[in-house]
Amino acid sequence: MEKEYLNLNNLEVYLLSRQLSDIGWKIYTDFDWKLQKIIGDQFIESTDSVGANIAEGYGRFHYLDKIKFYYNARASLKESRHWFELMKKRKLIDNQIQKDYLKIYAQLSPKLNSFIGATYKKVKKS
Image 1 (tube, rainbow, N blue to C red):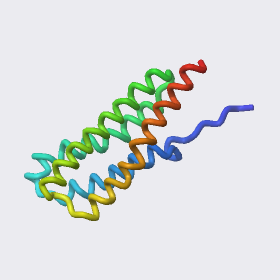
Image 2 (image 1 turned 180 degrees about the vertical axis):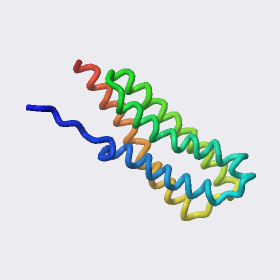
Image 3 (image 1 turned 30 degrees about the vertical axis):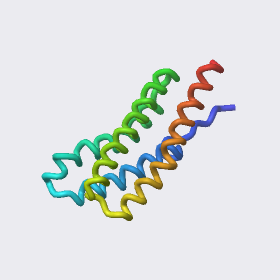
C-alpha cells in the first residue's frame, strides 16, 4: 500500500497563512508610497514570510529541518503582529480590516504551534 501525503494546498495552517497574506496585501496596497516604505514593506514581508516558511519547511525531508522553517514561520507571524499593532495604534487601518486580520491571526497562531508540536512527535517516533 502506497503512503498518501497531504498536499500543501490542503494544509489548514498553510491556507490560513495565505488568508493572512491576502489581508496584509489589502492593508499594504491601501497605503501611499511613503507609508509603504516606512512601515508597509516590513509588514507585508513578515506576513508573506509566514506562508513561505511553512511551504519551505513542508518541502523538506528531515523533520528537524522542517521544524526550523516552522519556527521561522512563527517568528514571522509575531513580527507581522508587531507591525500590525503599530499601524493600528497609529490609526492606519480601518476597523473591518483589523477584525479580519485578528480573526485569522487568532486561528493561525495556535494551529501553527500545534503543527510544530505534531512535527516534533514524528521526530520522536523515528
